[in-house]
Image (cartoon, rainbow, N blue to C red; front, side):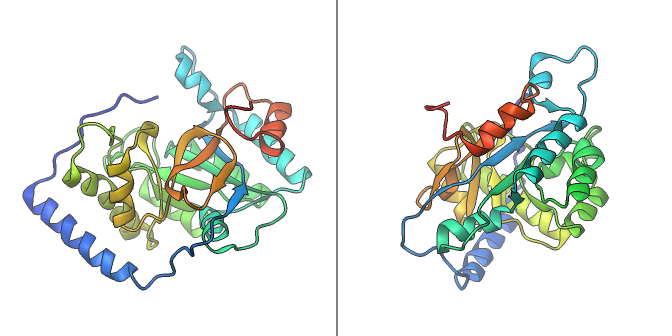
Length: 274
């Protein structure tokens, strides 16, 4: 769990450049395929992981809760394989909700928040071993800074080239719903999107709200800069096409054993029923 840092205030030149990029993107995206008007409802488990590593000695309750060991993660992937589940990307999920694309009978999305180094060291090799895909939400400024314990751009590019999905988790992980005005939101969301595109050659279309914090203004700016859907920390597996910017997820904890994991993936509907 990270402390929320005050948002970095972009210079006037950077704000102007970001706004120009925003205008260019709005015009460029106008020709893209949009969601149709059909309201669709879909049950799809979107799993939320953080660390895939054994917590160091003395870890606090948050680190323990957010950590799944590599052995535990492998057991989750084994359960998915043995029970006929196929990993899909958020692009697939979006196509199903917005345009009625047919998904595999047993589909699941694996997401990983924050961009920890163990995503490359542990999660990535296991995903490749099992022939599965993952979606990694990264904080671009932490990578730019070379912050210890987080991915590097070389690692991100290798993962993207191997078929992993690299998506935005903002530029510096602030609380976007508090103390972040319009310029700040553009800087945080568009700045991260543009950085990922520059580093990987693929423009992100999906967003993960830092610490799960968002409001109508955050949703509006995200949509303006080309984000087509976003994931939250709300618990659930049911999604509707009119709530694409508020997709629920299934939180996977350090205590999530295989039996609980199987029930969450195959049976659970949401927090009110769990």
